[in-house]
Structure formats: structure tokens, C-alpha cells
Image (cartoon, rainbow, N blue to C red; front, side, top):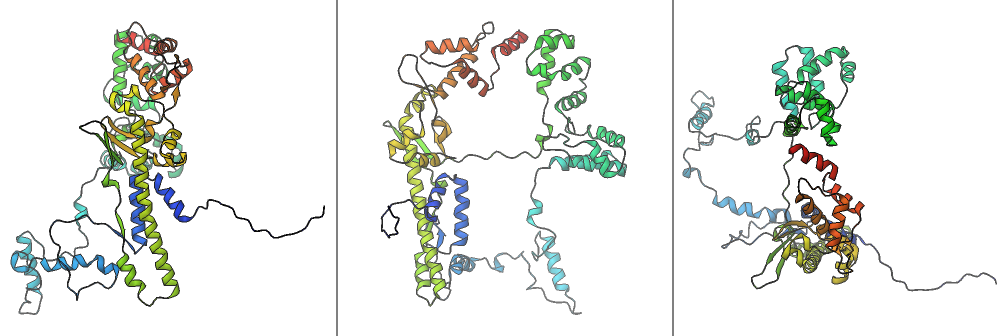
Length: 503
């Protein structure tokens, strides 16, 4: 059969990821803070977008015809122009003396200006605001950083200039937790001085506040704090030297090494736990960012739930079609017309994408509440297994869309603030062949069993498996161990040792 060339015409359908579609997908997975930053950037680069201002009470003054702005930038500043008409006059504030009313002296010098400033100083005011060396920002207070705190002590406690130079380099090697991150030989090589002198300076710096700073490891950090409290003795030294036994809760071994009884060991361990393993974190700490919910949920008086979007997290933008019409009527070049048309299309698509994003979030949140109603009524033990496919099939969306919607989105419920991802948990089979159990509910049940165990009857993982099996939960021992370790609960052997020490 001979090969030949021919020309065919075929029709096919394909999904093309246009820039607008990519933008809509991107908006779905943004948090409310990221969305605000994204909209702010769009407002800066698109002249046809403007922020929807909240409605004000009472009539607003209208600018005169002569003062009508000629472009969008002037239109935004028109409110400042109108507000200037209501500025207080100089007669209303006779104490605010300015240079305009100050007459020059008879000898030609500007003594009148000096007298005006002198009068302003006596009355608590200023004649001008042009001082470049002082501003309102200089009056704002701020927290002292760890390095500033250490440098202040260095200038007071160490007088030798060479030791001060070594101390400044050592301060630069301190991390946010207060630990020394580099070797002393590095500083000695850099400054061309003996390592012994750097070690001697480090010993002086380790007496600085907060206690435990400039330590090279955890044991040295605890040692410095115990010495500061005058609690350093051979027993404590043996305990700090065997922190690995403390982590393993090997109290019998610690009692033999420290040569103390159970009561003394319990007090020593309590003192160790009262110390700060990261003394530098008292400085440079980041303030926790409050989570703003995207969805608000509350119970209705007649039953059911009221679910709505948080209007404070929704950016409000409008398309300035009046400005577009005025620009389009003008004589523009072809490039300018293409640019303004592209900006109009981009603005309309952004407004549409924001509206579609809000509706999608509301639909997903409503379906989650419907399927997890038992959790909201009775607690976490009634949390049912749920995956993204269940929500996607219920609302007629793709699973990837639900995944994007539930990323970094929070819902304020009567039981607290929860991320939407929290309600999606894997399923654990039921021993009786009934409805499966949620993994989160099983973790909650395991924690409850361990919290309520008797001091003389510590539950092993096998015992927990037997207890859960009687309650209809078919779970393996390794799964119990995995959940217990994820909740940072020690093993039964470690818990038994700890409870024996407390007796």
C-alpha cells in the first residue's frame, strides 16, 4: 500500500488554560489575606478598577463644576479638594501662630519669625513642621531585640576594647533561640587572636541575661540556668549529663546515677522542666496572627444552621465604566485602544471571578455542614469519615476544585474555629460491619482512654485495641501506636514509669 498525503478538516474539543481561567483557579486557593494583597495589586495597575467604598450616612458634599477632575487620579483626590473648604481658619485657633503674621524687625532681621516660634514654644505648639530630624515615628515604642539586649550588657559589663570586639562577633553568632551557632575558633581566626581569649570572653557573656544564653547545646543551656539559680550540685550535674535517660523516662537508672531517692529525683526533674530550653525566644518573638474566618456559621432559633460568608474578608471592587466611556470617546491611538479594552476585560473578569469564588466557597461549606451535622450537634466523637470526592459529587464540582476551596479557609462554628480541611478524615472500618468511624473520632477516643486510665492500670496499645474492638472499631495495634505518637503521648512503659515516680 503506497503512502500518500492528504488534507483533512476535523473538529475537536479541548480545554485551553487561558490567562483568565488560570486567574480564576488561582483565586480559589488564596486565603483572605493573600486575596486582599492580590486585589490591591490589581487596583494599582488597572485604572478601570476602583474600591467600593461603604455607604456613608447623610448627604455628601458635591464638588463644583469648575473643580471637576480631568482624569481618574484627580477623581480619587476630589474628596480632598472638597474637604479643604471646611478646614478651620486661623481665627478659630489664635494660639496657632504662623510665620505669615510675623512682621520683620526694624533692623531688617527676621526677628518676627523668631518671636513667632518662641510664642509657639511657650504655648506648646510649633510654627512649622519642617524639622527633618524628628518625626512622629520616633515617638513610637518597639520591643528590644535579643542582640540589642546583649549588646547593651556588653557595653556595660566589659571594658576591654578587644573583649568587646570579640563579644560583638559572638553576639552575631547567636540564633533566635539564644544558642551559639558557630565555633569559637571561627571568631579567633577572624580576629587573629588566641582561642583561649575567645573562650574567656564567652564565659563572661554566658553570665548575661537571659540566663542560658550563649549556650552551645541543651545541656550547657540548662547548666547555665541552674548555676544562675544556685542549684548546681553533683546530683544535678549527673541528671543533666544523662538527659537521654530523662527523655526515655528511665527513672530507675537516673536514681542510681544521681544517688537520690524517688522524691528527690521528682523535685529535680520538676526544676529541670521549669527551665527555659530556648531563652532567646523571650525576645524577637512574632506576634501570633489572628485567624479571620471566611465563613460564619450559627444555629437558627427554629433549628438548622445559618451559613454565610464573612463580608469583612471579601474585597469589594467595581469597574469604573464611566471613566472607560470618557476615555473611549477620545481620540486614542490603536495601541491605547487595545490597552484600555484589555484593562476593561481584565477588570470585568476579576469581578466575575471574585463573585464565582464566593459562591463556590459558600456551596462547599454548606455541604460540609450538612454532612458533618453530628459533629456540630454532639462533638468530635460523631465526626464521620469524609473525603473530597464526597463533597464534589454532592455539589457537582471537580474534586480538585473542592481541594482548592478548602485550602486555607476557616469557618467560625459554635464549637470553635476550624479549617475546612479538618472535616475531611479517613475511614476506619467497623468490627460489626456497620458505618465506618472517622480517624479523628478514633484519635479522640484513644486520648480519652489514656487520660482516664488508673495509675495502677496503664493501658498498653494491645489493651486499647481490645477496648476499641468491643466498641465496634476495627483498628490495628500499629495504627493505635501511630495515632498515640502523633498526639505526643508516651508509650505504656514510659507512662508507667512516670506514674510510679509521682506516687
